[in-house]
Image (cartoon, rainbow, N blue to C red; front, side, top):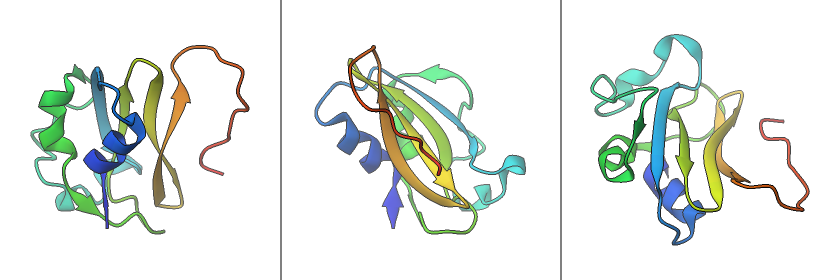
Length: 110
């Protein structure tokens, strides 16, 4: 099982998480949201502190193929923008640099 909170903290790698925006489920219409604790109370599409976001991100879900079992997320640290990628329901965390840097980009979701 996967956990959004653990994914984000792992990618942040000790950097302070400055802000978070939590979105809808990976597929339109909120399919799968019935399995997400606090889904209806979550402030979607709004910038919130990581302290506030923690309770909405701390749940386990399957990251395997099928319907995405988690919500979309952006999280900012000093050097990274963390997000969730998905392909056919398979989900994973990734990040892009917050600022320009010489680095080979990847193509998430492919």
